[in-house]
Image (cartoon, rainbow, N blue to C red; front, side):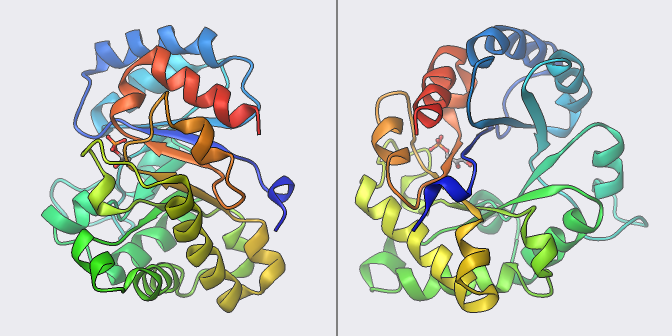
Length: 256
Ligand code: 13P
């Protein structure tokens, strides 16, 4: 295990929050607070906020991501957004397969894979989300499920493309609930993800992949979570909407 092989990434996922003018104000507030970060700092924002966010983040160390991407390059897919559109808009990262999309919008392991490939082929870095429900955990399926979701998401992703992949372990029961996984549970879940990558690409490649934890990570619990060997930063929902809280999380990851 060597944490030094990979960079921690703290990414905010704003979900369906913030108008463009609110996005500008929040990023302007965040910029000085995260300027000396030693980890990568990303904000994944609603599609309509991208232009304002890219403009506000210009010249800073904040990188902008989207919250989803369609898997086709173009065509009759009303309401969808392609990877090329995101790329041209200045987006560098994109969340793929968030559990809210799996739960409410019919996302499957197959479409997560297709979206990841579309992102990678366009030069975007996918933040691929995996995670078990409480029921799956209680039935003892956490390891099996995390490994399956990880391998499915990475089908046909080349070893070279793997370098641009981030995986976020987000236990569904910890998202937006205020119930955080313990640091040991996060480390264990992230470890299963890394084992799955090692099984598919070899140990050396797996050691280089950033694996985040997500689920009620906040200013209070971030330091303990990111201190774990398998936790390379976080994907932050609620706490990424508050400049001060988000910057404390960035500082925690910078100290690792
Ligand atoms: P919360 O941090 O609000 O629990 O959300 C986590 C998450 O889903 C990030 O993608």
